Each structure stands twice: as C-alpha cells, then as structure tokens.
Length: 189
Image (cartoon, rainbow, N blue to C red; front, top):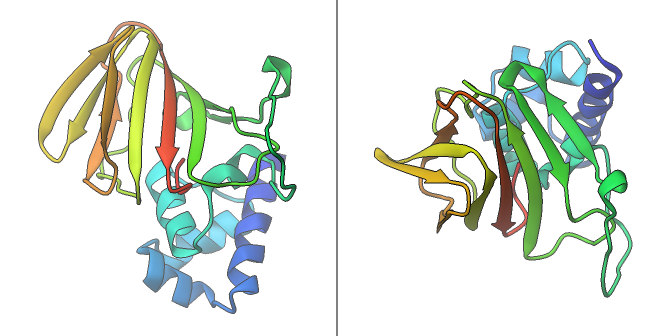
C-alpha cells in the first residue's frame, strides 16, 4: 500500500487513541467494520469516501487529515497558491481532491476542488454529514442523488443543500468534471 495510506492510517489510529477508543468502540460509533478500521490503521486499505466520512464524524475530526495537512495556527487569513494545495488522489474512485483552506484553523467553512473522472461516484451508499454543502461545477457535469431526488448540474451551475440529508454523486458523462465544494461545520471530505 502507499505511503499516503500508511500516514492516513496512523492519523486515524492517533485520533482514536487520543479519545481513548478501542477499534471496536470506533466501529460501533462509526458503523465501519472492525476489520476495515484495522486494515486502514495498518496502511493496508484506503478508506472509501463514505467510510472516511463516517470515521471522521465518529472521531469528531475534519476530513482534512486526508489531505496530509494539519491546521494548528490561528491566522486572520490564509493564501493558498495553486502549487501549495494539499492534494489527495483516490484512484479507486477516479477522484482527486485539492484543499483550498490549508493554513487556516478549521472554522465554519471547508473548501475543496474535486476532479472527478468519467464513471466515478461517491459510492453505492448514501453519505451524510453535518452542515451545508455547496457544489459549483467548474467544468463538465455531475449528477447528485439527494435522498432520491436526481439533480444534474453542469459547468457554471451550483447546488446548495443541507448535507445531513442522505446524498451521493456520480459522473455519468464521457469526460471528467471539476467541482468547487464548500462545506460548513468543518466535517467534510
């Protein structure tokens, strides 16, 4: 497995241990099987997006740890240059996430640019997380399923919704889609 998977697993283990949780307790809290958590923590498996969101929510952590960065400095502002963005690739999902909020202590908003390959999707399971989500399509198009309602958005379109509503997305077009995602409440992917 990759060095990134090892690092991610170590971060999840550290968050879990810092909260005094066993793997079984985290599994119960997150709904992610014990065996899956063990494989993730040992760098043998990259979590699916849904599992990562469930683990982060259970650990009361921000999914920014997926982007190999931490935020500990209090700053009045943060500038993130294109070549300085934290970047994480999920090849099994044909998804690349770039962090736009590096260097700023998590607060109300989190933002990402996502490049989603043709045929990629967030998973078969619906996800939900606290707060609101805004998706703005920079190029291509993407389809959201928001609790059974299908919404297609294309270049220049935006979608804003309560992200505790079960939702998932997929790219059923012939090309990649690039999205700007903004999340409130800090618990995002």
